[in-house]
Image (tube, rainbow, N blue to C red; front, side, top):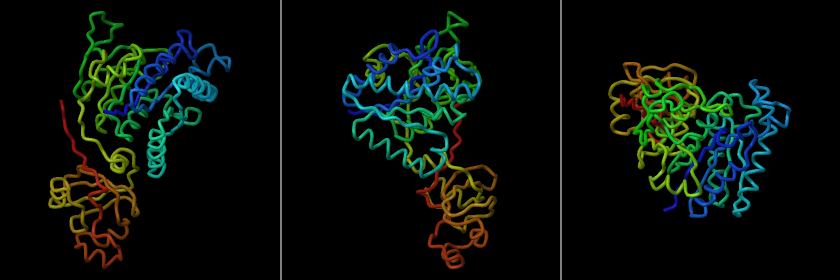
Length: 373
């Protein structure tokens, strides 16, 4: 059965010991990906390494610490990195495609949708999308987790079967092996809890990367929320991805297969959209939308805040001021203010709005606070 896998390769897994891009390491990764693709599967590659590939060409002896230094190195290194991938995959007669993203690609509904359709077309045409944050203009990636979060978002966007994080460590340990030689590797983590994240340091495991194990666990938590199970470990050879998908990987599996996935439109509403206001509803409306999968009608609205227009996303609060959902509204703040508590027919007549719902159930996500502690 064909699988779709998002693979993230970090800087530390591509850099030479002294810095710079290691073609030997890169080719090892490409060999594993190519074998998996030629077996009939799909791979989307999220690759760091642009800064590592470019800083020496600018005369830096070490990876630069300043934002402007990192961005300049990324501007030089991105071309070098992609060219190396292009040549390596070409040996397997595989076509590569570059996509550079910034965070606003996900917050803007139209860019988000365009990115999705572009990636789907590339995969349909058997090309390998190679994605990186646009390091030269985006500050976030350089302090955000070395593309870990970007990879998690892409895995959700494309409803991947698995999100694989290749690192320079062979999994998640109960303690840092460098601090305790008796540390034990954890082969399976059912879910990521807040207490687990609190116990893990943000520090990087490598001087060449910007992310550490904590950024990977935070990204894993997001991927699980989006319905994608996760694997963290080393690339141990050409058959690594086949072993990982078969459940025989030597690293750490996080979450189980068969997680509930989100449609693209609801992912955008629930995880990426900008909130323009809040709508408070009564108990009856809460029961209707949470338990009966109903739309939110004007009759159930008791209060408003913000300044929203039709198509904007708002938070939906119950009488206890708890956020129970998010959704795209059919009414503006001004129009809805005039029809609070009215029936749908009355509201439509008074405002001229063609929609009986304030928020249709197909454009609404329910926020469920589930504790695993």
